[in-house]
Structures are given as structure tokens and as C-alpha cells.
Length: 74
Image: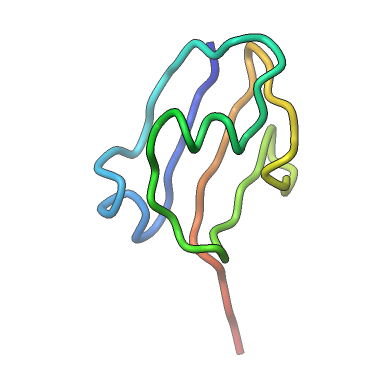
């Protein structure tokens, strides 16, 4: 089981703030996004277990995934 959290405007855009799912072995973050049919901009940020990750990162049972919009500051 993986745990997905969404943050900021992505909570409203995606329609959930927390989701638990089972994923097939050897899945990547890109596979998960495709399976969920999530329509996210190219600059969306992802973290797996509190580490920023690319879409090619493999996910495994027990992972915590965060989906967040890009941040800026000043």
C-alpha cells in the first residue's frame, strides 16, 4: 500500500488530500500518475518519503508520496 498526499492548490484540482493505493511491483511514479489519470502541469513537484523525486523513480509498498505545486519565494 502506498500513501499519496496532495498539497496547496493540487488538493482542489485533484479532488483529494490523501489516498491509499496498492500498486503493482516495479511501478514508477510515472506509471502511478498515468494509472490515476492525473492531469498535472509539467512543473509539478513530487517527493517520495520526503525526498524530491522524478517521474522515473520506482515506488514500492509503504512509500509516502507527496504531490505539490512549484514553490517560489522572495
